Structure formats: structure tokens, C-alpha cells
Length: 369
Image 1 (spheres, one colour):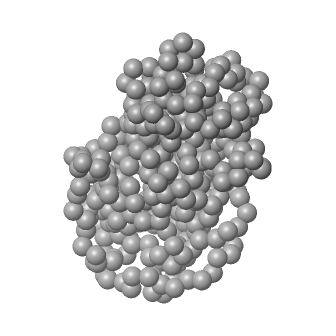
Image 2 (cartoon, helix red, strand yellow):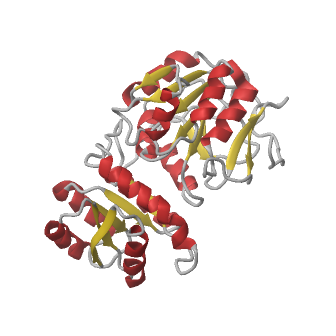
């Protein structure tokens, strides 16, 4: 039985979250707390296996509470985050501090909104309890400024075609792992990187901005028509799918609102299949830490098309679901630790062609390709 403490300043949420969690017979909510000060006392008293933590609370807020938990009590935490830009920024700070993952509060908690996130919350609590990484945040590379970001010079704003296209799928444990890996890549990295991170709408723009501040490469939330270029990282927006298209004036990404695939939008499989079709052997497929199996079949399609396919190893994965699914099916050419991923990509991607191209090609298509 997994013992959970629910921490939230809303009396309604302190009632709703336990009801949702206890739909699963393996979870028992042992208590609730209205702020961080009460939470710390109840953690010592009740000894929960996991905690759900609201970040916006009076007296002692969620960030300070999390700091105390990570420093003293070492209990895995799943953040329940406000669905706002400010909430997203605080959420990523919490993940960097050691929170296992987050669930976004729906705008309508009294309707079907909370029911829709119930299974996600349950799955993440179970994964948090099993994960060996919940008790230590991932160290990040480089020196950081006062805001907590790595300060490095960016490459000149000359857009050049990419030597390779790296299609990357990632989920639980992804924000810290991706920040770590991207921070190791040099400013002259010649490939483009296309990222599908399982994340709700409203969070991916803040996520991309954080990554942009944390690494040498240019990182942005993708828009339809964005060029696939050397040293550019395009992050698929939450609740959209991302595909690629070869165009006379440059290769671009195309976003769509097609139905969920594998229960996800964005889906890693959607990106991987598209990259396999358009780029074949000129691509790299990379599947990193995450729950479930999204991306496994797509990685197999990329391998058949001649791409190098890589899966993150179990020892460095926060959750070994997505990489394991691909490895067990024989779809990964290589199994690589998080610490070695950047050097693997650098060694494989060669050098860029210094041929300027138009910055953006207008693409209005948003349907199935």
C-alpha cells in the first residue's frame, strides 16, 4: 500500500485529490495539510511514501516546503501545478530542486477536469515511489547566474541547413534530463533537434525558454513553418502533434490538432514516423526517460529507414518505460547513458553546411501528412 500525504491550501482540493487517488486500491491517503508548515510536521508524524504538493500556499509556500523535504525528509514529491505561465515557471524550478514530476490543475476542478487527470496523478505517484532518482535532483552542467540559468554565448543568427535531424522523445524525468544533455552540446552543433516532451499546453513555451537560457543552442517552442536548421532545438507545443516536411526553400516542421496517438498529444510516434519518412538515414532517433511505450514503434520505423536509433539506459533513466519498450523490441542500435548522450550525438552528426537559407517558410497545412 502506497501512503500519500496531500498538501494543498484549497479545502476543495484537499477533498477531491484523496477521493481520486483512492480509486486505486494500492493507494491510501494518510493525511492532508493546508500549508508547508503543517506538511512538514505531518510528514514526520505519518511517514508517507509520497506527497502531492501545491506550490501556491500561504505561510510556507510549496517551493520552501519542497526545499525542506529534499534537504531533510527525502520523500518523493509530485507537484500539482497551477495552469498559468507563472505557475509553469515555478513548476520547473520545483523539478530542478528534486520534485519527481508534476500534474497540471485543470481550469475546471468541479467538472470533468479532475477526473481527467486522476489516472495521470496515480501513475506518477506509483512511478515516483519506485524510482531510484526521486531522492536526488540531477546535477546540471556549467556555471549559473542569479536566476539559476547557465549563461553562455549563442551562435550567430545565420541559419544553415542541419547535417542531421535528431528526433527526440521524452516524458517523465524529461525536463532535467533534457536540460542536462542540451547543456553539453557546443554552440557549433551541426544538427537540428526536434523534441516531443509529454507536457500539457501552457507549459511548453516556458519549458523552451528555460532550455534556451540553459544551453548554447537556440531553443524555442515550435510553430508551423519553423525551419529545421543547424543548432536549433524546436520543442513541440503541448496538445499539438509535430511532423516534418521537406520544402524547396528549406525543411520545416508542421503542427496539427489530429487525435491523440498512444493516449498522447503530442506523441513521439507521430514525430518519429514523419522523420523516418522524410529524412531516412539522415536522422537520429533518441528515446529518453519516460513512462509508457510512446515512441517505441516509431523508433523501429526510423531504424528500418536507416536512421541511427538510441535509447537512454536504465541506470540513468528516472523512469525506464519508453526506452525499455524500444530496447526489448530490438529497435535501438545503441543504449547510452544520459552522461554520454551528448558525445554520442556530436560524434555522429558530423559538420554543418554553411549555406544560408530563408529564416521561415510559410506553412498553413495543419492536417495529417
